[in-house]
Image 1 (cartoon, helix red, strand yellow):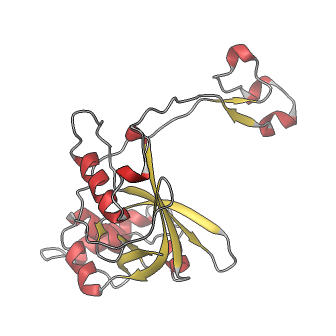
Image 2 (cartoon, rainbow, N blue to C red):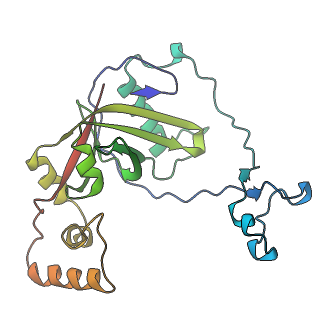
Length: 238
């Protein structure tokens, strides 16, 4: 795991975390042919008949002046996971001089196909245990199929405090019992969604709604069982 600068990988136990909410971010963009006076606007493609206008280069012109406490290796815990635990607790319950981070458990995870093509998507970190970072998903999804290749990379970005954490490691499925225990804590709607939603597959108009109704009927009046095709993955830092 890399925290800002490269640090040695040491394993330790860290707690489970409570999900929060995250708002989206936006940047100003403009076409390479835009005038300096309109450098923060998007040109209207319909304003020209030039077929090349729609393929013009787009550049980012906004600049954020990042401000954060000075970071040195001497000021960090030599165990990266212990340092992550402290930062995460500060993100959840920030000291008076640190802004709160919205949904700090949101993380981007990158997998690689058998042909070497990378694919990235956002998931929610649910556990950091003595081995690594755990999240839950559909085992039939594209990401799960690619994770079976053995390796993955994680990136966590906390805009509010100008901080990022990187993890590179081996991946493994967690114990089935642990997956069931977590599944039983999820809201009923999320449990039904795990059965009804075929991840990484096309669905027809109204098909998902029909599948939800079918699952609701199947488990009417009783607890929703954890599907065999759903569970946790652990990324174990190298």
